[in-house]
Length: 161
Image (cartoon, rainbow, N blue to C red):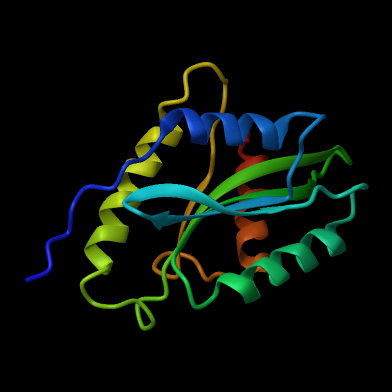
């Protein structure tokens, strides 16, 4: 019998990672995280973009997606958004990616419950004034740059970013 046990989610690690992604010194374009040895750990950090270039941002997303499409991952992605005012911003979104067709049946509850803990940890950051958009892919949103960026733009127009 397989027993799905609790997975350790280090809230300080998530907070530190978010801080590094938003700092001017250690900016990353993305961070993917996975479950390893019953812990959520950083799997990959994407190099920062040197300039504001939405086409390059999309390319980075698609390269990250190609490496993670067959794996379940917890992802921070730094979207570059050109607001209607002409203001250029970089806004981080949290993406939970699980291709249910490629995940073993007994792993689904483990990843889903861990995602709930990760999501709560992200929303519990108290030392930042932030609203991190959350996308559950592919359940609610396609794992697609254009679709996710369009949602980020909608949130920016509503003042939610």
